[in-house]
Image (cartoon, rainbow, N blue to C red):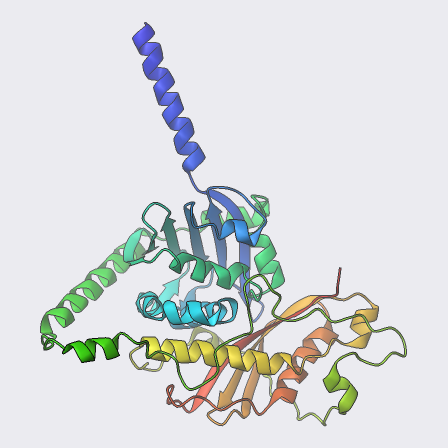
Length: 401
């Protein structure tokens, strides 16, 4: 009898330990574009917290998950959006150090994500390994203890997709019940799981063939080794300074009283120039789905780093032209706006579309006009070798507490 009780007690203790170690749902956030639901993002952590620094603690296991709502979601668009967030929420030293890992991560995304797909990114605190899976099919692993936080900062860093998105992920376990029900109901069908497994097998076979076909390189001379050890990833453009972790990317504007002059130097020294009509247009289903995607040049660490640094430069340039509408300040109106901007290689604005709007027309209008005022943007770096460049601009209007 004593032996039986001891076994039961040990089982209960083991169960309690397992439950304690299991990742807990810290928060859920809904991503919308063009007023349509795209996916639900989730952050899991061993300890619930509403503090970003606590969730970036590398000593505990954590997970990120994306469950797709849209019928089709371009994997490339999803990947590029995430990489933009990485660029503006990580210091330049991190971007340089993680450039090769970002190539590995970016190459995991092929084709399309479909409704019900579950993309999971798990961090093992004991080994420092980040694993990426789709519908429980392993896509790849990255053995770098700092890589997971590089991804997570894109969601909960100083410049998230929106303040609501970040706040919802840092909910300390408090989530919207309706959103949770939708999240749990999103599951891939058996046919989709088999399709992902087949694609993973093909990709693995292709990688093995490429590795076996690669000719062995001659052993380099010591002088060549020393030269190669020096990093060659930095493009000929300034390093990003937009988002130092722990500091706000945009200073909160000071409220302007009736009859007072704006506090910014730009507003004091120059009058706003006449604005060209904003080239906005509703997105068509074909544009949203991007049924036919262009061929993309093979990604390299240098190319990814150039894109990330250039994106940070574009945002810094845009933020200089943002003005908090006086009427919105007087009424205490706050909100987030996200724009999709297309420029040509010389930096001229070709198109602006609104991905997400705030509740207030004045804030939405100011975001669009700020982009128009900011043109022309800095020209695209030679490393990208492209005729036009698309990037998203997250703008948050928030008054001081």
